[in-house]
Image (tube, rainbow, N blue to C red; front, side, top):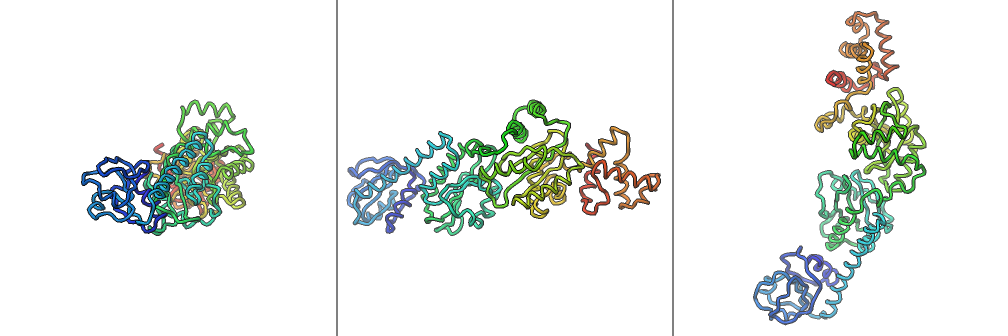
Length: 489
């Protein structure tokens, strides 16, 4: 069955002089019939008739059918029934054949999509089949505006910047409803959002080859339903072109941690069997391409690049980004960040990073921080750490009740842990130095130690924990916050 609105709009495209009076445009109707007697109950069908035949219809309620009337009927009947009026010169048989072909075409197209979905041929194959019917390109975007699949019927992806608007990418937009971009009567594009696999996606159809018609909305809604069933890693073919396959078992374990799947204990045991120890520290990284193209081949290439260039690295697509886990520690974090910036600039990618943290706890939250840092990558030469953007994001992190351990400087956490295990007082030294506005003489006096002893402690804090309290780029807010919450942890 097809909605009355769809039939009306397709008829208007074929018969520009059509007029209509439809009160229930969303009601679905079945295949067309020719008019047979004025006393018949037609049900939810399309009825093709002449104005003379239509005027014989008894004045009883028949809200279900859609009448395609050749010639103008009485005004009373126009007000009473759902009617599309065509020129009196049209042939009933020609109108019948045209509407039948609409049904046949939609049936064939729906069957084609169903076959692609059931066969698992991939999202791009589904988009290509939809593009054949829409006669326009079709693209699939993830939540960050990356192209993750597209029909082959497109040569204009580079010109879509004006279509990827704030409205398209806004996080609180309505799901499951077609929205138009541009002029209401002649839109530049239309899109529909859907949710699948704990992620959100947007299907976009720009009017690059022919104008968009209202009936195309029904096509896009149907496409969204099939795509929702297909949006898995298998049907996006992520990982199919990887050069390095040896890390796949590790990647599956990290994906389980990011998804909070399975028991953490089982996943951690699997990782330790594969050589990733819970006693080590790991940085979580989020990567995206600068050109928004994150289709399968590009995502796989980014993964291979990271694993080639970084030691002890496991990278994998985790839409809407490429995620990576890198073994590192506090003293190596600045070297890692510099290397990431070099990779970002040479390979036209953007990188965000959550600094190293011990073990495998809080992995979803670590990835969230890496994606937060990714939003600021352009401001930090292509690669930003969460510590770089802490001052911009503190209020949002508190609002979302982010774990305090992840908001605390890793170096301050390490100071506190070391003090507890070795009965030292490095944390008190750092706190006193901050309170005395980084005045060495005044701080040494307050701590009742010689100035040279205090300077020795500062050097130890820098060398052993990577915390340079005299670094002018150090965020004072982050330091103060860390010194406060480390006492609560």
